[in-house]
Image (tube, rainbow, N blue to C red; front, side, top):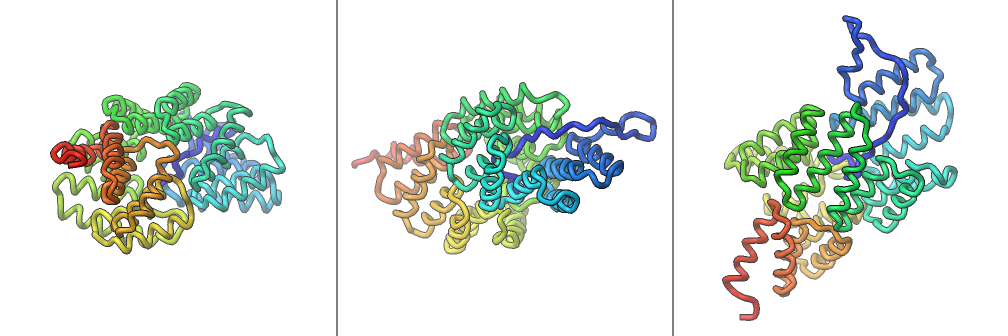
Length: 423
C-alpha cells in the first residue's frame, strides 16, 4: 500500500513519563518513536480518562505507527481514539484535523481535501492544514493548488513537514536536485531520536538518486536507513530496485520478499513477482502474479487500492488489455495525478486508442516530471502514433536517466540507429 507519496512527518507533542521494564530500565528505549508516543498517550488517558487531547495524541501516534509498519489496522484504532475524543469534546479542532490526516492515510483524497478546506476557514494560519491541502491536491493532480498550499506552509514556518512537501513538488516539477536539497535540509533538522522519520527521509533521498541513476549514492543512503530503522519496508523496497538496476535479480527478489512479509500489500507483491520473473524463477513469478491479481481485485473498488499495478499487470503481463482499460478508467474517474495519467495512457495504448493515449501521457509530462518510465511510455505511444521524431526524443530522455526503465528505451534507440528516421 502506498501511504501517499507525500507522507506526513508530524511533530507530535512530547509527553513526559517513562514506562519501566522489568529491570527498571526505561522500556521506551526499545520502542519505535510511534510506539513511545502510543505508550505516552495511553498513560495520560489512564491518569485522566476524560482528557480528549490525550485521545487525539493517541490517534496521531497510531497513525504514525501505521506508516512505520505499513499496517492499516492502526488507522482503525486511531478512528476509535478519535471517537472517544469527540464523545468528550464534540467537534474539537485537533480531533477534526486528525480526521483529515486519517482520510489521507486511507487515500480518501477528495474527502480529505474538502474537510481540510472547511477547517482552514476557521484556522487560516494553521500550518498543518496547509500540509493536508498540499497532500490532497497532489494526489488528485491539482498541482497549482498544491503548490499554493505548500508555499503558504513555507511562509508560515519552513519546518520539516513543509520541506518534505516542497521536495516532492520539486520532484514532480522536474527539479530533482532541488528536491534532494530540501530533503537534506529536512534530514538535518530532524532530531536523532526520531529514527523512523530520519530513515524515511533517507529513503526518499535514495529514491531521488535512483530516479536519475545515482545508484551507489542511493545504496549508501538505504544502508544507512536500514541501520537506523532495521527491516524498514520502504528502504527494503528501494534497495530491491537498486539490485534490479545492478542486475542482481536474485538479491532483489529476496529483498522484495522481505518487504512483502513486512508489508503484505498487493502492490508490494506485484513488484516481488516482477523481480522473481527477472530472476528466472518463472513458476514462482507466475504464482505471485496470480496471488497479486486476486488480492488487487478485492481492493480495486476501494480508495486505498493497487489499481496502478493492476493496470500494468493486465497490460504488460497478462495480455488482458480490456481489463486494463476498465481499471484505468475507474481510477481516472477518481484522480488525475501524473502516475494515474500514465497508467491510463498505457491502458489506452495497449487497446489501440492512440490519440487519447498521447493526450494523457503528454498531460502527465506537462507537469515537468523527469521519469524514465513515463518518457519510455511516451516514446512507445508517439512511435506507434506515427511520430518517430517525437518518439526518439522521448526515448533519449528516458535513456539519459539511466534507470531500469531506461534499458528498453536504449533498445529502441538502437533500432533507430539501424533504420534512421526518414529512410
